[in-house]
Length: 403
Image (cartoon, rainbow, N blue to C red):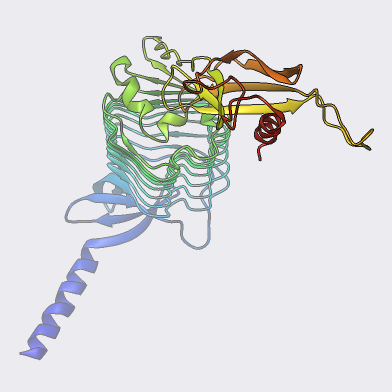
């Protein structure tokens, strides 16, 4: 039984190999499958690199049979720095992994409408590539597909793409603007990371998720247009080091408050409607100017605005030291009190001023609201002994000094 299984496996292997051959046709290498009559462009052989302008045909002939060229295999043109342009035929449906990775001399490429996916690192580090038009047949752009294409100044993403892979356009320093179509649902992590020349981003209405550092380190960013009425689920570091606190966010007018309520969107300097509407900011209330009074316990502040804090400063015009003349020192201080009310979410009140001075040994209050110290009491009689005397003045001095 085991011998029979091994025989069948060997037979299948030989049969499979019999249907696929590798051959060079007009300067390009192909894998040819005889039963399907399909051809795949493959990597160069014998250490020869592809160079110059290459046009991949729709069909090739081999041993009298015609083969349709339907794909470009992974790494087919990898590191071909002498390659300057490539034309891909309408028969090709997918571009594999790292197909043009490191083709630094590549300046133009024509991607046909037949291609449905662009593989991982397909155009990685193609530094000479200046513009790319992705046809509306493409549904996915793989991770790092155009990463490091520093010469890329424009890219057209069609309305068929549903996701933009991680690092897809990272380090594309020549990009100044990008439009992400309504079909895109997710923008993966680092998708446009370190696009240092990017000034304008337009994000379509279909986006649901924006992942880590998708637009981070884009320091020239000035305007972001997000057409999604429901705020996309966005990582807080999506715009890290992009100075969005100096940029303007344009969103549907009905969604302005929603964007303002969640980070990182709330950190934009200005958030306005797509129609140009700039919502009026609610006027910040101002604390009422407090009043000041004096009772037997000290200073009493009152304010019409509830739950305020009072900031105050007391200065004394009669601070001095020396030797008593005849064991007596005349007290003629003037205390100046400046104060204002403050409260979170409110503007500070106007600053008010009050003074306490002595006239013939009796304190004179200016700028104070009179508070009745009680029936039968004398104004200024702090210890309420029926007279205003030195003890009361001493109490006032202690109070003013914060003792």
